[in-house]
Image (cartoon, rainbow over all chains, first blue to last red; front, side):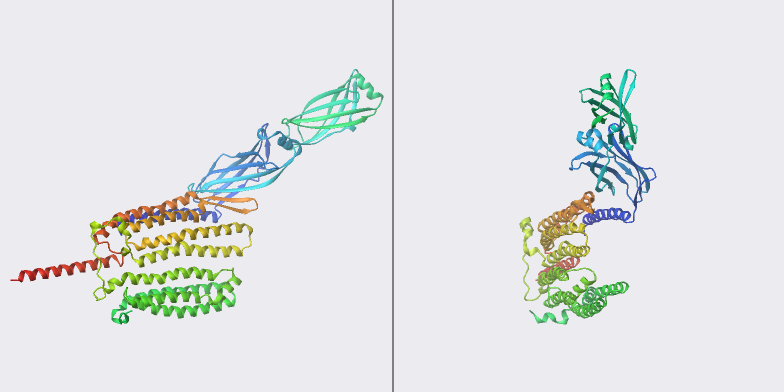
Length: 272
Length: 366
């Protein structure tokens, strides 16, 4: 056979052998468990809240005992609403995991609250909702010739941030300090750990059957079980009516958080 | 048919022994070694008694058919190419090999036992695929006979003188003349490609599908149905490759008639690799709602680049062999190159001798 033909044949053989070697060196470590992924359970990963986003920060240790670096590892998250609409998407920065090393990564997924519609945000804050949470992990391997991706979804039950708002009208009481009169209306609600210490605006509106109406605005730091009272000022006339006979009172308490509001209204008969 | 061609004076003992040895390895030694391995494996896995009995039956068949084929192989190899004697023994070997393979199915009992012990595998379908390849082998014997008949007949009263051709009158389109072709080379290459691109992949798909169907896993149904479409594609692409391979092998090196089918083969091969490689993407639903995806198109493209180099190879082959083929008088590509060169040298020496004798006669003439 002519020499140039032998050279081309050798070239073809070399390319095929290289491809074969890449395949073997890629598959063997995977079969022998050469890539190990550990979530750091010692440092509990949990949701955290900022004024514009909810995020989950989770430490991850990846041991790559394979022959090739794992490049451009990205972890993408998609939150889908109950009707399948995309609520939020987030993709981590790409990370590289060198071969023969143990690499610590921080996986951060963020739900940007500004991207959510008012209804969805309201459900997240006050009602709780079900979301589908889709994770896609993708990375390049074998000298970036192979891209591996794993996509999985799971249902996520989201508990409301603020719940169990209740006006405790049975404990309401009249207060008088000489010429200043007021009505104390206790209320209670529950706040998730996630927003502990965050300011929650409480608007209380009081009205009686004679058309008297007054408002009170409070800012309360969220905590586990909030038990507060709204002390609404009342006039002498209202005070007199309430002390002299039965009266029908209406109280609305509105919680405002992240631009969403939730109102509870109670009407009851007051007897002195 | 000339019965005289069966005369032992035409035979070559050494060639017969070599051929017998090759036939013995192929039809006797290799099957016996495989049976031995199978027996050892079965004894380790505590296999059913029926399978062991069947292996003994198969062993007997191998011994009988293998010995007969070895003897026939001796005669096939001993007689020269182009003779009726070699054609007769060659065809007998090719046909007997088909009966040999069919007898190993043990009238369907082997399939039944396999179904009980492992999984349902359609052995008759596998035999049908083998039959197609083996039928080609019968044709190859005929091709060899046709190709070498002229050289075998040379020097006898039945020999037909070869047409002389003026190289200056030869155009590239003339490369497609049938007389340049070797039926043996064409059929042999065609058979090799049929086995490589159609039969082996189909056998692989059939066995894999049978194995997958034995695993009761819903996720594998998708993969099994994809295998069906892959098998259809392999058939659709493998058959044109087989057809083109015939012409590539048929025509000699340095001819356009060989280059064009070769080019077509490479292009189809590239598409074949792309299809068989599932277009470089694989997505498997490994668990409920968890999808594992693999994009290996980069790797597949490297393999395809390697295969595409064959285009360079065939261009070079055309360029390098064309002058040689032209100088050789546009001969068909049969026999070994050294053999051809020796024949040509002998012929040249003979002509030179005749010229020399004629010259001396003229000189001595008063």
